[in-house]
Length: 176
Length: 373
Image (cartoon, each protein chain N blue to C red):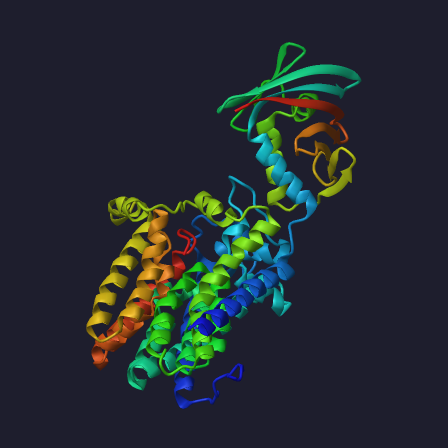
């Protein structure tokens, strides 16, 4: 009886190990860039507002983004700048306003953008740095670089398009 | 000391296999022709023009697209979004092993796996009953209405083959081989749990004729499928950092496993029968038919372990709170085919049932753009 149980236990362990090994050898782990993006989207889901200092169009702008379930509002230098409702920007939709909206780092909009890039398996280049990670999406329009802390929260965004370019320092606050 | 050897059963081509192969070929011609007509004439349903741009795209639709994604990019779990961790690795591993582009590999692997499955099912049925009933049951398995998925990017035919091969190996006392097949089945889909009751009953019935080591092998064969299913959680813990990724992701697909799941699923049945949701209607009707055929199966002498196996296939998914895809899951309820074989002894009844099954098979192909299998 004991021998039968020992044989079965041994064989089941071999099955378990072989199956894990086959799957791991076949598919490995998701690349670092994808894992950082997944962690970031998870983190961003916990926030509903952020502050950003935007360096664009030769100016320094102070932005504040707040989102509700229906709409996202970006206020720049204490004036309503861009409002997004149902994934459509209302009011100003110039390239400069779009750039500001991207650089504003609104948590929901940024999360959606990162999820979109994940879903289509976009080219993402990850570089580990001393205090975090740099993720570049060179083929996105416009090209986007996001710097993450070690706790997977974005702290700097950089846009490098022809008409939409600039950088921003973002700080997330108030968990949902 | 007992010799530890893998004893593959002796394989000899039999005349009955040609009959089975003939029905396999005929059923696949019917399915592929129906897909060809669908590709040319529509309806287009929920499918965009991209699906109709490539002749093989229809076969790669719904779950097939996700399996392709696993083959091409591996696993990635995005919490709160539908991810590919909902799809077990056995089938995409095999697709990758072929070295073919996934869109080509899917129908090739699925169709060939069906041929192996049908031959294994014939042999299994002949061992459990008689050659005549086995032949009739195999024909119904080949032309099962939901069996159009056997030609698509779905692992159903591979799972069917592995379950039958595991049982055949066990019946031939090749328990190590049964362990390998059962483990491969578990790695392919969680429905592989269906192999546990008949394997368990067989191992129990032979416990006195086996020496202690072989008894251990038999016990391992019974536990192999659950172990392989558990292995996916271990892999996900390592690969995406969450051992529960599969069950979390199932929730985003509308499947949240709870004890009250069957009650929640049944709450949707009236709406389904009124035709509000085409796929629920199809799956609710299929569930009713499978249940009725299981009653027939018990009456015509199918043993309890096989009935329980079919119930595992049909009832466990209900705990996720929906009847969705029951038509496809029921393909692995093998007693259904034995019941059909029993009630189609007469030529007239057999012919009518086959025609009806073929008609439903073609109809469900045409409905593919409206309802995922």
